Image (cartoon, rainbow, N blue to C red; front, side):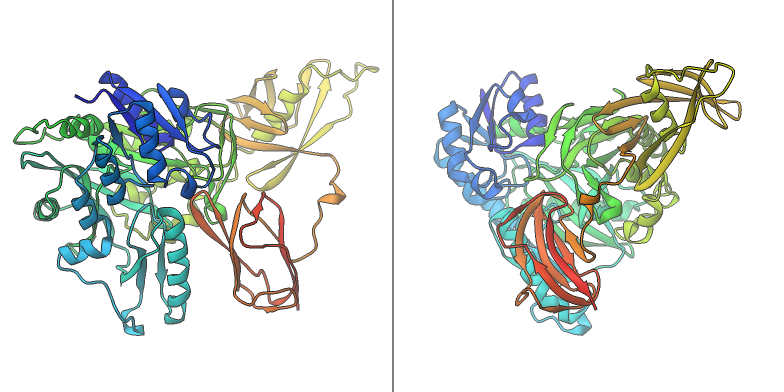
Length: 613
C-alpha cells in the first residue's frame, strides 16, 4: 500500500492530487522552486522540499533533484501531474530505479506515445517530410509535451523556417526537448478526445468523449463531456481507436487519446500519457475520482469489467490571468480575492492574497459545472463565473461568460476556429456605466462636507477612473440631504457599498479598494490623478514590455540604426511559459535597442524605439 506521495508538479494539479491523497489517508510531499516557497501547493502539503532556482529548467524539470527530494522526504510513490516531466520516460525510470512507485504508465508506453512523431507512426500516420506550397496550411508541432507550446500554424512557405526555429526554442524551454515535426493543418475541425483508464490485468476502459474545441494559442479554454452532436457510429469509432492505441503499447493508468473531427471523420492527433487538465468533466459525468483510480492501479488493483454509466453533462472553463483583448497577454500581480458559489467545483492553486508569478502558466483555476443536461450545465457555469468575486490582475472571465452564452456554443456548433471568428465581439465589453459613479460615491463617504450656505448646492466634485481601457469622469455633490448625482437617486452609500436608483430600478454595487485599484461588482477600475504625470510620457515609437518576462531572442542582424518594416518581428519575450513576439509598429529606423537575450524585464520597461519614416 502507498503511504506517502510526492507530486512532481506545482499549482492547481498538485493541490488537486493532494486533496485525493488526504481523503485516502496518504501523506503528501510537495516540491517547490524559490518563487513557489509559499505557494498554495507548498502550504497544503504535509512536507515540502526546495528545488533551488526559479526557471522550470532548473527546478520542476530536474528529474534528479525530484527523485532525491522523494527519497529525502520518505515518500514511497511519485505522481507527475501534467506538464513538466509527466511524459518523460527517463524520469519514470529514475523513479522506479530509486525503488519508488510510479503513479503513471510504464516508461515504455510513455516512450512510445509521448513523442507525437512515434505515436503517429504507431498508428500508421507519417508526418510531412518535405513541405511544399501545395501542402499549406501546415502545423509545426513539438514532439514532446502539450499545452499548446511549441505549436505554430504556417500559411506561407516563407514562414516555415522561422516557425520551425521558434517552435524548437519554445519546446526546448518548456519540455527540455526541441524536437518538432510538421503535419497537415485541418481548418475548423472539432478537437475531441477520449479518456482511457487501464489496469495491469488487461482491462481498458474508454470513459466517454470530451470536446475541447474552444482554444487559444492551441491551448484549451472550455472543455465538456460528453462531446455534443456526435453520431453513435463516430462515438464507437473514437472509443475503438482509443482502446486500440492503449493496447498497442500495453498502457496502464489514466491517459487521453486526442482526435480532430472534421466531415464526420476522426483524425488521430496524439496520445497524452498522463492526466489531462480537463479530467474533472469526466469525473463529474462518471462519478469517479481519476486520481484515486490511478493510485489504486499503481497498487495493483483491478478495474471492474465495465466502467460506470455516464450521467448528465459537465463543462469546465479555465480561468487565466491574461488579457484576451491584448493578444492574450499574461498578467501578474496579487490575486486579492477569489471566490465562487459552492454549486460549482473549483480547482485552483491560489488563495486570496497570493501573488501570481511570472515563471509559470497563467491559469488561476478551473471551474466545473455538472447538471442533468448540457444546456443546464452551460447556464450554471456561466452564471457562477459571472457572479464570481475576482479581484486582481486582468483575467479572461468575461470572455468565458460570453463564450458560454454565444449561440454557436450553446447549439454545439463550435470548432477550433471559434476565437478566430468571434474574439472581437467576445471581449468588447465596456463595463457597467454606473460603476465609476458608485466608486466615487463610496470614496466620498466620510469626507468633510461643504459648509456655508445650506440652501445652495455645493460645488460639484469630479473624479476620473480608467475602466475597460477607457477614461471616465464622474460628478457628484455634497448637499444637506447627502450625496447627489445627476440622473440617479442615491439611496445608500458607505465605504463598501452603494445603492442607486436608475429610472426606477435599484442598482446595488459592492465596492472594494486595494490602493488605487477598485472593484465595483465585477468591474475593475483604476483611480486616475487629477493631472497627468509629465514623466510618464515616452518617445513616439517606443516599444514597452507588455508583461514581465525574459528576452529570449532578438531578430538576426538587428542593431540600432537598422531599417525595419511595419509588423516586422524585432524580439521575443518569454513569460508564463509562452513566447510573445514584439513587432515594429510602423516602418522606420530602430533608433534604440535595449533588449538583450537573457535580460529580465518588467511591465512597461522600454525595449526599443522605432522612429517612423
